[in-house]
Image (cartoon, each protein chain N blue to C red):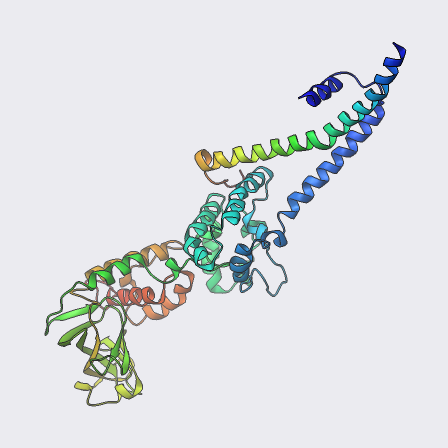
Length: 58
Length: 394
């Protein structure tokens, strides 16, 4: 029981660090870019179909 | 799938191996690095280096910019692509960056990868930018140029005459200042579509000998029916009598007045009026065999210059004459009103006399994008509808 726990403890540490770094360095930045890009795209499409070109001070 | 499940299982539990402090610090640093990187990337895509890395930009618009005041000037301030073409506020800027995906598409599929393709698209591309500048009141121009910072006393009188009323109306810069950083689309610089239509119409007008017709554009004049010996140029909207036809050529008789001082190269529409009809080469103007003098030494009281009435008979191409000038004047009048009313209320043609109009017109025409041919027609329209010719005018 203790051995299994030790083993999973070592693997758990590795997994935890990998998960942490993967999320902070890859997932969140990509999501942020996607959200910002998506926002820009939505605004662009609104400009094309609804709002017209960006207006004075808008 | 299994990896994602494992990852999810790890993430949903509180960490047991990494301390909260380490997580905070690493996340914070990662945030800084990301933000810095994001900004750097955004700034990089705003640099000129990035813009001209596409040869579409490098070969066309970038080269044109280098001949303008926005490239080099006495104050040493210079505009790069993004100063004018990328909105400065955040939301519009992000939207513009996304819009650039269309430019990436164009670069990959070669939408405008040759000068010919670019020229064909120039009008459309320019219209997009003009629409944008119109909508935002030329916001990007105003990052540098501000009506409130203009010192009217330091402007030339001519500039001030336009800038002050424009400032009062808070007019969008692009209304008048099109084509200042890049070439104007050819359609605007060279040919007026309405005028082109009249020239096309003229090709189907049948010419009867002995009848009076009017040139739909300026026409080269020759001494021989083979059209090899150049004699001069007949100006637009000039009345001519057809006296002979030979193949694709017609012999024109141009009734005109000219000044009997100098070589008499310029033919005018009427006595004492500087309304151009034709310009002859020097040797032609001196050739008594070609120029039939009707009246001579008629002195213009205003200038004291002697004028003479002449008939000049020369050959020219067929198919460029109309039966009357009404359609030409209509086109010219429309062009005059459209071009001038962009910046100011245009004076009625009969507000000035025929000899005042040329100076007025040449002082102003630089602000418009009329082609040389259109300018010639519009000036003649103004002169022929000036106070000298209009009924009941002052």
